[in-house]
Length: 238
Image (cartoon, rainbow, N blue to C red):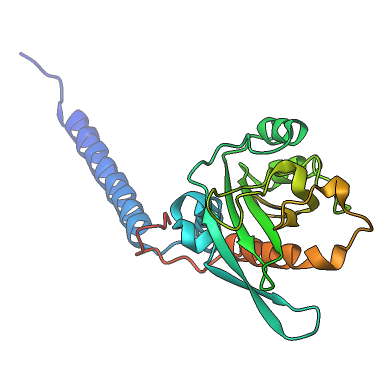
């Protein structure tokens, strides 16, 4: 005759089942809360950072490089630079060799370029947007470019045959600039419409090319300023 008493085992099993059920309920409740809660402030900041870093790729070319850009006139008031064209090529190699190597070593993701004409139609400027993996790498790449307005080593000009910019060759460059914010560098290289080599120009006239820096700063500000995340929008990952 089996005199063992099975009920303690059954009680233990029942208790274990109850504990598991409670644990599952707690876990399910936590998961449900996690799925239904709104994004935290940290998550919103992370989403905003990701969105900024992808603007060079997700924004239409005409948003990165507007058709016209305002700048301050030498005589006072406001004038507008007109876009001549945008390059479809996003290779990071469109710079002097030393500068291109610096971009490559910093992990350059793409280099966008567009050429603008000043309001007096005498000066051309190519603006380049270099997208880097993050702010630290962008600062690293910036160190390759001159800070004193010299155009070399720097961005190569973007010419368009059959337009006012058809003679905008590397030899024409007279001024350059570099700016950085977040993961972006915005570069400029400027010269005169008549195709005069920079080496043939007499006394430097920095005021003539000052507008190039101003329009590049507008482009950089638009690209690097975070926006309030809209977690329902297709471009956001909250």
